[in-house]
Length: 484
Image 1 (cartoon, rainbow, N blue to C red):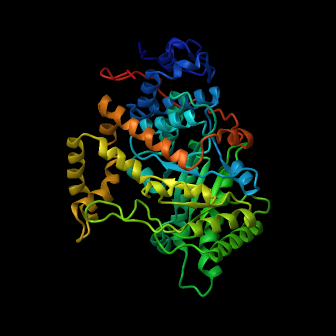
Image 2: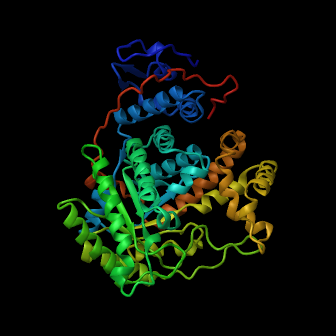
């Protein structure tokens, strides 16, 4: 039985007047602190109701309280947002090797998708994986950082996963056109997102200033100068925002994904310039833990007229060379490969073979979702795109190309309908995700990496105060389905 609670204050001790009563007394709130008496109660449909409140609560206060409760439950049982920085530095020092960390962009059906990720990780004893969302995705999927963190942590709790949860800001990118017009305003927009994201629990951030590389300059240092100088500026801002006990993992980028392949000379020019500038401006400040490079992929893949994805000429030699250079010369984890999810299945086992530190996976999970939703909903979404994304249709685009490239923009506007898919559809989709994540985690050799996380990563307890004016109404809608 779900309870509709009354006003809460920090001195309240009666669990029957708290959202914790969702768990039948297994969770209590007293003096602004959460106690979990029976962790098994978290793996129930009542946590699903709490997540619904965190995402779709009727008021900001309701949403804020639900998110706070999820965070504090995580603090109590050891499901905490964490930085992968120390693990990556350990890899740069040769203390661990032989796996590639997947960074998974969870765009749609975030709770169901993340549950599958944690379910798979638990089965495989995997700990080294990242859940991420890019600056652009935050906008079009309508998932602000506070919501995203709450959903990711809740998914881990629901599946009984225990350990650090690595949540990452992907492509916190400086737009080169906006920078050319007003550089201060554009960089400040990225910094504002950093402030929001770190406060929410994003303790891993990829700073993407590769858009500022200027190949018209006479030498590599000048070509990379704006890239590394602005990256240093944002890096220092990130460091200033760190909570106590956390060194945020920060990545840089030397070549924009989808352009020319990166070279060792470019990596050297960027990293030497970055390290020199950081040391001059802020001696002793921690630098980068990884470096993103271009080796032949593109975000989302290249879609052909029939809707299929073109083959990719992935340059594994480049990845291997740059990863080794990043470790040996700069003590970072290695190189990062973006745009990898639409590669053929046979490509993935190559990444740990050449010691790629991390790969980013996004579009294919979105494709799996679209393959499983009811045809009527898919047609409704495509009709919406015909009107709301028509300006993105190129003259030569087939319908298949247009819908494939733009359907990510419908994720936010259709979020409620996607979260409300029938149980049988969600079950089939969950099985498809389980199979895909099992395959990827196996190919990337992250099974068993929990041992490295336990050895190198510290996830400090970081309590948060009760949100101001937060409502405690955490009741499910009358027609909510609380079944598994």
